[in-house]
Length: 480
Image 1 (cartoon, helix red, strand yellow):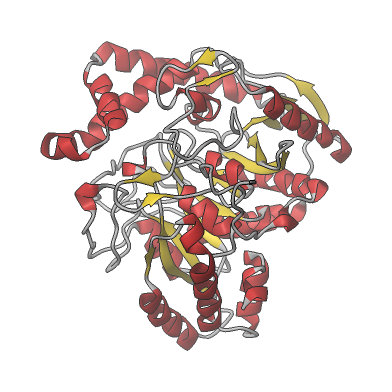
Image 2 (image 1 turned 180 degrees about the horizontal axis):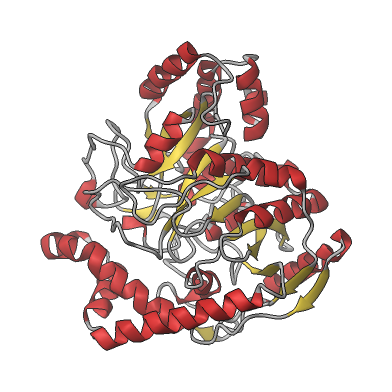
């Protein structure tokens, strides 16, 4: 059982496809690992083992090796689903007391797609309240802890998914990303997290209590221990759906095949801070050294960055506007059950004028064109994923770095959210460790709709760094 949980997702799916291991055996292995580790990290608070076994048996009746349109077939691989996505018949809380007893009748499109392509939902992963805040803690399930040091946060809002992967509880997990929610936990837990382009992964359904069908800031994404695993999951997620008007068809070439091509970038830009935020010196140094190693792949590495000077303001306006559309109905009915940070952010949105919003939208258009032009000269943009290493789990957010004080509870992760404003795909990949052994992530940003070359370059970098083999790990208590 232990050996199965140490497999990468790609290796596990290969065994499942060949019939050398059954989905039920994989479920048993994952369940044993969860039972052995979850009380120390609290990553998967809701299990649905019986439902998973029922689904696995149905998949086994179809036989190994079945594929949909020649694409990814997960063949019965157990996965975790972030507790912001409804799963039919499974408690789905959104990390909020408002939904503490919610059991949806229908699954999100993301879940339906994954289950239709051979994924087996084994558990729901923990998330902060309503998915807001980059520290995974809520009043329903409590704190999720970083397995590299259980006194620290794994980040958020996809913290439960990142921890489940790092500890070997599951092989793949869903995540979502508005400002940093996939990328920060990936960096803090030394896993790989991809924020794809808007529409790459169809989502819904209509009636989701915290969703907006035309939301183009937040996206669903893919998380795994390796780049190849993330590509495999993205293949199993990608595609259009009539209920998601922003969704786009999957590309002709699979992302798995793109990774196998191992196409090296020719010209790479590195920025230690994107010109928008203070980054701790040790993080800057680790990421700069990692970026320089792209030279070993034959790339020219230069310090450069597109003009992102207005991206912070653009995102903050559009985020506040987004929260008004998403959460005002809940605020009107359940104000006493929503945390102060989220209430503040909603109320900031309510103060916006139509001209404020229009100005931000115009600014975002200009920003997009500047970034698209930048990628005519560079294949990749590299920067730190986070401005600090993992911090005390009891701190709600990072208040300052090296004397620079942040404006609000999410300002500290502007190094990620300014990229959200560009709509470019972005991936966090492990790139080293601090002097105290805490993970550091490098944020790799690709051109518009450029997931394939981004993943291909990331796979080459991953091989060069040789960090992926460190996972999974047993949860580590703080040093005495």
